[in-house]
Amino acid sequence: MKIMVVGGGGREHAIIKSIKKNKNVKEIFALPGNGGMAEDATLVPIGAKDIPAIVEFALKEKIDYAVVAPDDPLVLGCVDALEKVGIPSFGPRANAAIIEGSKVFSKNLMKKYGIPTAAYEVFDNAAAALEYVDSCPIPTVIKADGLALGKGVIIATDRDMAKDAVHSIMEDKKFGESGNNIVIEEFLEGPEVSVLAFTDGKCVRPMVSSMDHKRALDNDMGLNTGGMGTVAPNPYYTEAIAEECMERIFLPTIKAMCAEGREFRGCLYFGLMLTKDGPKVIEYNCRFGDPETQVVLPLLESDLLEIMMATSSGNLEKCEVKFASRNACCVIMASKGYPEAYEKGYEIVMDESVKDSVFVAGASIKDERLLTAGGRVLGVTAVEDSLGEAIESAYRKVECVRFENAYYRRDIGAKAMAALGGKN
Ligand code: AMP
Ligand code: GLY
Image (cartoon, rainbow, N blue to C red):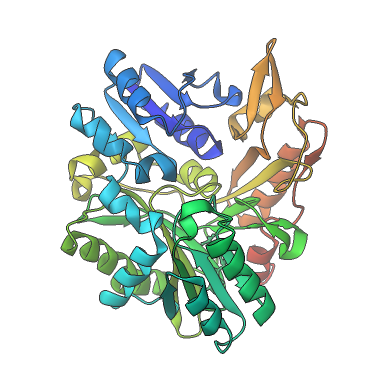
């Protein structure tokens, strides 16, 4: 089979490495991929948002199956366009990807179908939003409606900050058209859990839970990033909580999307907060998370490609989705300065022994040398029997990867270890 993966980060590298294990796979193309995946996929210089070029390439190469991984092409209708020319694809159509593409849509969906989430108000003009933040409870959370590279959420700890957020999103258009509408919502507290789930629109198969570390610096300080590391499973996510989430969140969401005529097929990401009033949805993503995928897929024992194909053909019920009862830890190595300004172009050198554990997010190849080319450069994942061992092993592997200006958090998994009472 000829497979095509749209996207170019660490998540896509993890997906490609997992798909490669299927014996029927002859060739994998990455559009555009990045230099760090060149040993696992054929790189094709087509941007993930260039849908006409993606479709043309898929037809020319007679691609058997496509995986569309990032949010932008999904929201723009990449799966619709590929299906239209007869290429089966993994990922939701645009009318379902809206669950991530519009926070106003997802909040209204949850309200209509009684799915637990933070209380909220929607505003389409700055004056009304400013009046609201004059008297709303503080802290408050302000979110741009549309996609904003994961940066469209501001937690305002005082009224001036809330007003600044309204001005910058709605008036200065910090996130462009994504800020035409905003959601202002109740500030929730509790441990966060990421749950990715395969769904074919009827059946939902949650993957092993995980914990992201979004802030740039140790002890959850510094700016929000795309994610600086992950562990799986997430110790806060007990079996009882998983059952409650299935009944009150996962199944109701899948049914709600069907009832709206927006059947969701692909990977639905539930960003959950375990509050004292029970689990609540913080956000939905219409795709695999990054870097959650880098800990979840290495624990998958079943065949990823078979699951993906069953998901898109509506046959997930018959498919085995099994995870190892082990633990994984992924440490992201970034360029110093990320998520703000950083330098690139430094050579990446790694020991042969860790190559299989590395998922490259931002690198290019020049004269056969691998060079840093992004903020998040790569993720190093270890899988072990206990969380403690997985963390230790991941950091040992990090020592085997070298590039100038490398920065990484030293405390990935520390919170999860504390939740286990440090006994794992
Ligand atoms: P997002 O970009 O939507 O993933 O949100 C970024 C982060 O903001 C989340 O991971 C949460 O830590 C935090 N967040 C979002 N909404 C809320 C909320 N209603 N209450 C507290 N924290 C929130
Ligand atoms: N790690 C969070 C995300 O993928 O949005």
